[in-house]
Amino acid sequence: MSGHRKQTGFGGVIFFVVTVGLGLYFTFASVQGDYGLFRRVQIRAEAQTLTGERDRLVAEIAALSNKTLRLSDDYLDLDLLDQQAREMLGMVRSNEVVLR
Image (cartoon, rainbow, N blue to C red; front, side, top):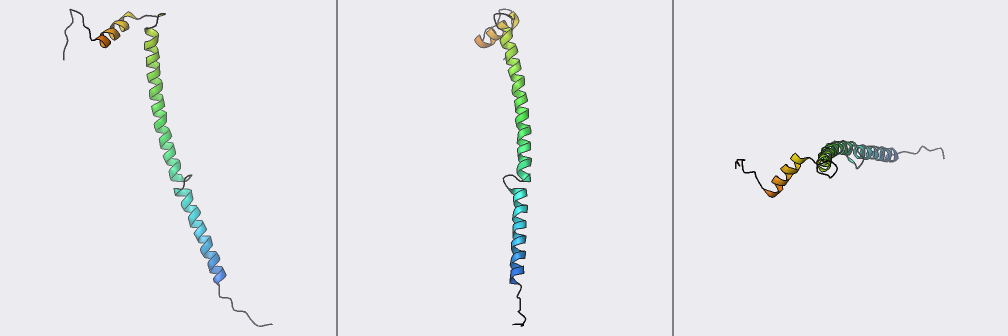
């Protein structure tokens, strides 16, 4: 019973291979995965694009609200009303020259 037992080292090799494999997998997932670094950069770029679009739409809404106010019953801008009527109806005054 005092004989020496030879160890082949397969357990250590298997442990090493599994550890390295898991390390590589988690490294890959942290960079390329659904919640990885590349996805985070992509989400930030998309957020900046959407923020710019939102700001453009807010400015457009403000301009349309201003036009709506100027054409309302409470505050009627006759020049704007005249411009909009001519644009929509395609009419011109008799003393105007139309260039096409």
